[in-house]
Amino acid sequence: MNPSIWELETFYRNRDVVIIGAGFTGLWTAISVKEKFPDKSVLVVERSPVPMGASTRNAGFACFGSLTEIIADSEKSGWEKTLALAKMRFDGLQKIQNTFQPEEIDFELCGGYEILNDDKPLQRIDEVNERLKVITGLEKTYFLNQKKIAAFGIRNSGFLVENPCEGSLHSGKLLQKLQEKCIALGVEFLFGTEVLKLSETENSVKISSENFDIQSEKLIIATNAFTKNLLPEIDIIPARGQILLTEPVEGLKLKGTFHYDEGFYYFRNLGNRILLGGARNLDFKTEETAELETTEVLQNHLENFLRTVILPETPFKIAHRWSGIMAMGLEKSPIIERISPRQIAAVRLSGMGVALAPMIGEMAADLL
Image (tube, rainbow, N blue to C red; front, side, top):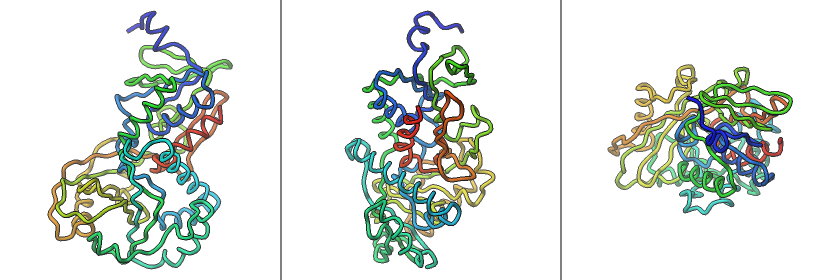
């Protein structure tokens, strides 16, 4: 199908900057580009009717990270990279709160909690707090709060570590508000448009779809877990996160965002329902996929975790099941780099896209 002259001169015309991907990273990047370069034309191209990776299919955590996750990161990557990533998450969460009213995105600074079943991480809590103080401004970013184990009604939990930096939000509403802000700034969109090929010359970079080409001065790739479709050599491993949501639970005591097993399990209350996800560490290989399916094995395991830890002796029914696709790699730090004279990659958010995307958007805009 050949485009008409009207389409070629409007929707498919050349732009100054094209961003591929309309998830959190793509939208925060578009906002940052327009704020930094208000006269530049910016187009966001998205292959799906709504973004289909992790932005609209996550657990709605405004996630700072758990104690054991910080410790594990420091042991793998060293303190310099761990603290840089923690600062990026902290600053990103602050930017979300400074940009939108809580009621616009159902944001609640409810606090984050981590369930521990041995005290080994607690032996390093003072060290971690000392290192994080310069980022959070808190004497105790993490602290033990044993009283809330009973108050929340959870079982099989030896210790409960609280973290006041974390919150919850409505991912769909946040994405809608970001779209509204983009449109107010003059950002344009093409949804339902899959980019099949990229080609670059000395003067421009071209994206090719099934029926048309668009050229731009600069291209920013913000496709996270699906980036290998465009950049086959990039260090990205897709990682599926499976989720379930209960029907309303009478007398639910649980309130906040919760982590278990270095963040591989995560759950929260959604009103008087429980949203639970994760456990991909039970079957890493199967979950290294970009297929948006759920599996009986992991869903049954999550239900059992719900039954034994979160809602012991409490009847529940499952209302919804879904999955989202995150982007992992050999390193946890995001990739924000110029990959050619006219192309920039802003990808690999390692399951922390809500918190990281606001700052990654700024960094990608700075690379222009």
